Image (tube, rainbow, N blue to C red; front, side):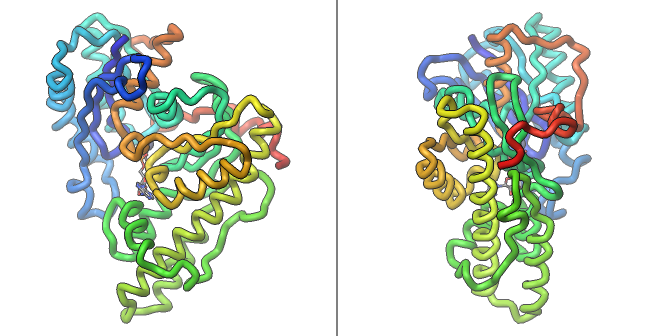
Length: 356
Ligand code: KG4
Ligand code: ZN
């Protein structure tokens, strides 16, 4: 089975052909990605209108490049999968309309994929991680723990009550003058700094449940920088980056301990995998802290390679493939959605284990 996947929900235009080979290393038949970094860099963040236009300008040739690299005709694809949300609505519409046109012209089924499901299932593309697993989804727009029971069956255990963690990285980078995207730049600078120099807050640490809050931390970074004033040196900035990253990791570890307790209460010894996904999962310090935390809890960390953590076409093709195999296809009037929670019940009904 071969599925074409298209991703245009944020600032990466991406496309991939993925198959269901038994060996995970053989599954990505070909992939292409155009990063709009340079288009958005002057503004210090993603500008939705610029993103939509860049997707229009690059998507067709990217699809052409993907099939050329695979040495296969477009007709070889058994289905067309595409991100239908959540994300910047203009970009989502560009990808979705292109996918609908392809599906119609080729007479192939369309699979409207939730971008978050793409991230959530990427560990299965990379390593066949068995259900159920505990997922920490950390990206520019999302920061949540989910119990992943099966394709399409997600229970949100906790989420951020304000900013996403990737957003905190990006805003800290902007304050430190590191440019966009901030995560990798903050991580690089943090390696040279003293993480104990600034006493930054650990929001919600020790509180019940596994929700997050990052807006106070972001403000604390701004105040520390203001306190340093115009004379802040590169060494000062490295110390601040290191102290920020340490506060983030400390907070995530605390929240993860609670999430593991909540997950274990529900699934017992059935689920022994902790999965991380989303752009921030590319952070090496986070991966290593979570590896240790998982081991201490008799769990195994399953982390896709960094290229599959940040937005990409392969995770969308794979989520489409897993859905298609279960007989799930969409009609050509599938809507583009700016908001599309993986667990729609979460807001109305707290998770049963919420007391952990
Ligand atoms: O999943 P993603 O590519 O796009 C969204 O769906 O949001 O995530 C992008 C986010 C950005 O906030 C970026 O700064 C962050 O992931 N990120 C990182 C690292 N690499 C990317 N954050 C921390 N450390 C990294 N190495
Ligand atoms: Zn994403």
